[in-house]
Length: 93
Image (cartoon, rainbow, N blue to C red; front, top):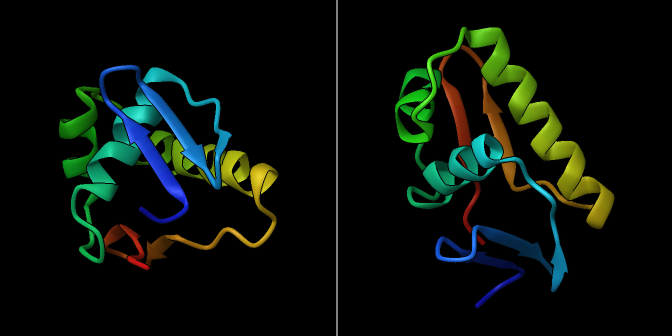
């Protein structure tokens, strides 16, 4: 199953069996990314999937916080890519 455990029903995310405490918006942003591993998701697609209407900087801030939360669980976490000028991507295993 890999290091990521994800439950939409319980709105829980774990990395290497350790819970990652995400806000509701962060949860839906990660959900959008992991549903399309390897594919770049634009900020607009992420906003649509998370059902939020915010500016690009806010999405950037959310992604930084999400990355920080995963790194706190695993210092070597590197699955969340920034694709300059395009958006973000969840790197498949």
